[in-house]
Image 1: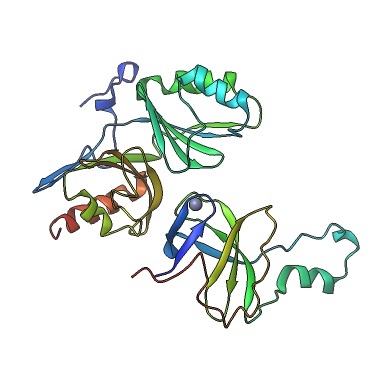
Image 2 (image 1 turned 180 degrees about the vertical axis):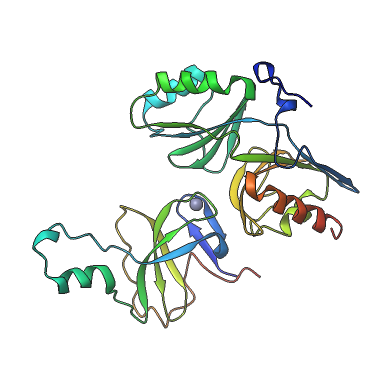
Length: 193
Length: 109
Ligand SMILES: [Zn+2]
């Protein structure tokens, strides 16, 4: 297939698992198409930083530890006291980044990490059992439910887990080069859960 | 399994963390005028006690923040974890004998 780079849609863009999907009893897994991802670091107690992100992307950055918030097509995840991950439409990442860089005060960092990571969406009643086979994180719905996220490990890979619905629907973000390892691990344990 | 309390993320499994030795060692300011022996002490020598020890830990698979922990090296019990810059907690009396009051570690199952 020939890709025209002046009119690329997310579906044209490569992801490490080539949009792999898996379906079995009680479990659906799908690699999502390329999402725009922005690594943002700064002092979020500073109102100038908060205002800049609010104006550029309509997103709040002062959020509780290990939670995320979604507004429109933007999602902001807490990664650390001075670190957030922002998802946006892949087509508007460049615009958001130049916007943020123009508005943020000094001492902040804005980096396009769209192709550092990929995201696997898991849904169905077996999601918790499948994930529990690889992570030590407590996934029980009483402590890990809709709106919460956590960086942890799955096998030996560092991942970002987030709960999008209590059905459950969870997203697993993993580094590009670990994606195949995590995917094979997930498919293998799916047979036993 | 040990549960360690990250000051930012709360209780997490030991395997998300790594330990990087003794805490509260300040880099000397007068490096120009130090003797080789003094510099060697700063770079290589650590207290290595049997008993309570203040250590630097990092939540490597989690928020990737550094923090400090007060751990008994004989029992492996972690008595407290605290953020960088916070006042270190007092060392509990008769620490090695007292293994029931830890607030940051314990058996999960
Ligand atoms: Zn943490």
